[in-house]
Length: 79
Image (cartoon, rainbow, N blue to C red; front, side, top):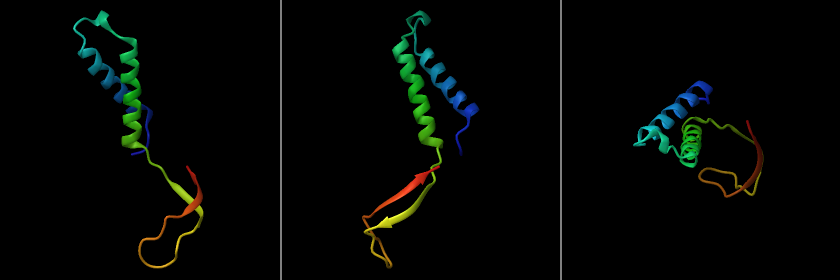
């Protein structure tokens, strides 16, 4: 699945709701813990949903033939 703002927003909302539910008194809200929850929700969403395509335009030091080759070095782009 590609990244989606609505889905990310839902993931953030769910994470923050879970955090707030752990509070015995809503006035105990800790900004640092709240922002850690927010940051972790974003990172978890990206790790679970990001699609990365890599185009390698050239590779050196890799032997041709059947089987596992490498290690090698190369250049490429991520889009």
